[in-house]
Image 1: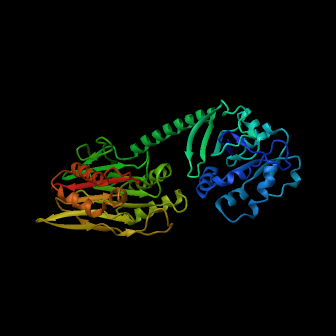
Image 2: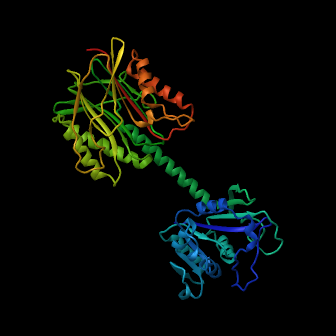
Image 3: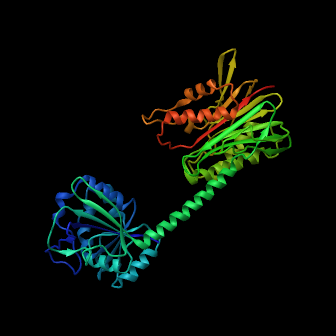
Length: 474
């Protein structure tokens, strides 16, 4: 149901000055007494409070006054929104309404407003009519009242609230002072506040369920592969996110799945499940956007990948990635995509074959007699889900005992401190090199701690995912 918000200028003693010009009963434009207190900041605030889209509920005289100015007003956000809004006007002469789009409201105001609120559309805004205001408050149809209290005592005129104080069904929600002295008080219908609180509680529970479901999409046990240590962790910026990682045990002809939560969704080679391993599938991705929409596309990406690795028969990673791209393209809206990296590690030969679809290049760190070599796994093709006919080429790298693979999303490398400086890939690599003798789970923990220490409490706005694979022996 649409919400109805009342906006009005009043004086400190709760008055609205009534114009001396002829007016229909109950209609009162606010006069020039508000002019000294108007400001660009106030206009910006009111424009923001009106919202991007709204419709208007107006008395006839207020409609005529606004209609004589806004259609010819200089272009602005407020002018555009007012002129585009549907105006529901209390009038006996609907045929004379020229400032459109408009619709006449008959004498049965209460039923008409209930009907309008039940219609699909943006929220309604009422300004400039004491008759409408009093009636709507009396029948509990106004969900919110926003008063711009001007720093002046009028001492005459009609009170906005007939009893001098806000209606008992209203509660003050917040108050904000402007430099010109105007105080903006926002009141909400208590029943509306209760309804909103119940809706928030329901939404929070649904998001919590979505978070629990998404956590189950990450690997729950890791495979036990001789000489291979695995650790991974995803920290979403919101309750749910669009980052994805996966470890899949691939047997020629079938698959068996992997990964275990070692507290806080950190998975490591210390929590493993024995599997016969021909190849080890390694995936990490970052879906565009954040929150619920990103998490849904993340689930689609996971399903697309697993559909391509289910039978384990194909070793053509380029074809697999092309199929993932097609499936994601068909399942997502335009301009939605994911950066994605997928590799298969041969469990015997230790050859790593991979395709990088526009993702941050994972790195393989190799210590050769105290000198570090860094292999960046960059090549493959474009992001998945954006182009319908994208093609991909696989690359290969032979891994050696002691090699460490770091795969991450940009939330890790772009973690920022209060000075808006990024942690960066160089610090990530240096931290991993400094702890080369630790197992994969310990390296992962050190990397997250280092990123957090660099950020020094600054809020992070992107999901952070890191995957560490370390070859400890032959």
